[in-house]
Length: 110
Image (cartoon, rainbow, N blue to C red):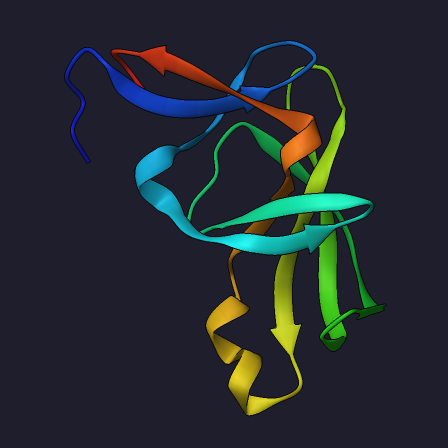
């Protein structure tokens, strides 16, 4: 990841805490709640809720909701386990609802 000035990040829409780097975006075509979501390979500054099986559009998966570590806003969910082989690539990755994040530019990420 390029840590030079001008790197792109996504922040919590409410408190502007950095949540993910643009470079960690895996897929921008997910659906989250009532709109688009982005799948990230790595996120920071989040707190995970309890794990539970949940029926999503793509089937049943074990997920944990993720919340902003600063303000507590629910941002999306993390795939803990998938039950079908063709969804295994999602395990350990996080979906953030587009409506819950905003773009930002910053020179430091961690």
